[in-house]
Image (tube, rainbow, N blue to C red; front, top):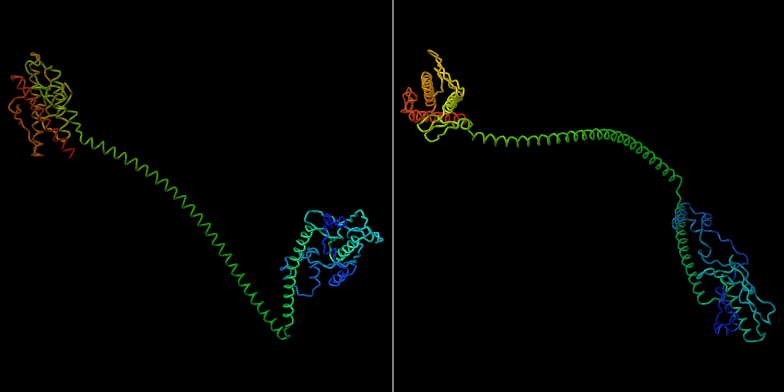
Length: 483
């Protein structure tokens, strides 16, 4: 059963006192007091910070710097609270009247006041003497003067007073507040251990520095060392001057190289510009070449087709229509029962004379005695030697124009004479050429070319022989050109 007069000094919850505390004999208090360390003076000593302590030491600056590095910075050491640096004994005179549970005892003539620190947050402990702590008064309870409970409470209060006078925390505490207090004390212990390790390392460095200082040099050794350092300094200065000269030379070389680099970049830019221009020109030329090749291929195909084509055969198409020889569809000749108009015959003779004239000009042959004058249906042949007569190469069917028909016969005889000269020239140029019908005076083959006193069938056959001879001459002339 919890005692209503004893509460936790942190959370103010009632406490259940342990039976061992209740039954503790008065002589046991003396034994406990004797085992505790003595209390400090009544005034609190000023705790100097680590930075202040470090400045007060007569250690070299290098050692102090090592200590600062090992600790992070003096400010970090100085910022630690006295609790973080370890619990320091508080020099205060604590009397039984400072704190603890308020008891109203008829035997005791005064009631001790208990200063109870308030819990600010859960898990935090307010120590006595802090700014936020405030004394909390509890209504006194009346206890019988000579009752056993009053005696036990006085003994318990004495024990708590003894513990509170040796610590920063008022007692008693409940189990939960005790656990929080232990965790806080454990953290302070860890921080104190770390600071202890830092002090140990600092002490080692100080000792090493003192040992080095104790090994002092003699005056001669110091002078030699100074002389050597001066020589090293002079050598370092000379090396520095040489390095400066080299730096200047390198700067000049760098400036020259930068100028060369800029020139090379300009040349490279010009090169790529010219390269691009040449590439564009090359592409244009390639396109033009491809166009020319395509045109050449097309023209070659046309040329090949034209080479296989004989325009003379198209211009002078020689064939036959029954018993008639034809040139360009015009019949040449007459037979009984087939009245061919003289206009058609005269036009056919005009085409025939034009063909003979064209073949002679094609092979560059000139007639010696005659000059051909092709004029369509009114063509004629002129003699260029002798009487220089002119013979018409067109006829008429009227009997009253007998004289004209006679000149027509002379014109046809002059035509086959010119044809014979052309055939002889071709044979002289190519012996392989064979003409099936030979020309002798007014006959070609075995029939006369004259119309008067001749049968129309024979005259028509002789005209067919003339067209056949012209066709052979045309074939030889055009093949010679093509070859």
